[in-house]
Image (cartoon, rainbow, N blue to C red; front, top):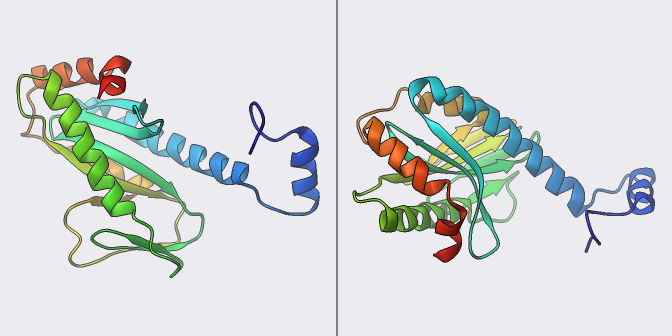
Length: 188
C-alpha cells in the first residue's frame, strides 16, 4: 500500500486535512506501544532479566519482545488499543465489544514457536510462557478461565521482575546468547 518508507507527504497531508486515519497511523501507534513496553521490560535488568526486541521470524513476522531471566522466558505480544475496553478469553479477545480477535491463541502459538527454536539450540528444556501486554487501554478484563496466557497492562509487566526458580544465571546467559543470533530464528 505504501511505496518505500510510507505514504508520501501529499498522502499524509490529505489524510490529516480530511481527518482520516490510515494503516500507517495504526502501525505507528503499535510501534509506540512496543517502545513503551520495551522501556518497562528494560527496567527488569536489575532482577537478572535480559530483553530482546523485535525478533524476526522466518515467516516475515516478528516476536515483539523476548524476556529471558530467572523466571523463564516470556514471548511478549504487545497490543495497542487507545482508550478501549478489552476483554481477553481463552483463545481470543474483544476490543470495545467488537469482533473476536485471536490474540490469546496467537500468543500461545508464538510461545510454542519460541520454545521449539530455543529447545533446538540449548541443552536443557527452556520454559517459555506467552504474555499479552495491552497499551493505552481504558479497561482490561480477563476471563475467569484464562490461565494459559499472562495478561498485563504495560505498567504491570514489572511484576515479572521478582519471578525466579526456572533458570539459573548460566542458563539465562545461554538462552540469551542463542536468542540473540538472527540465523537461529530464520532457520526454523
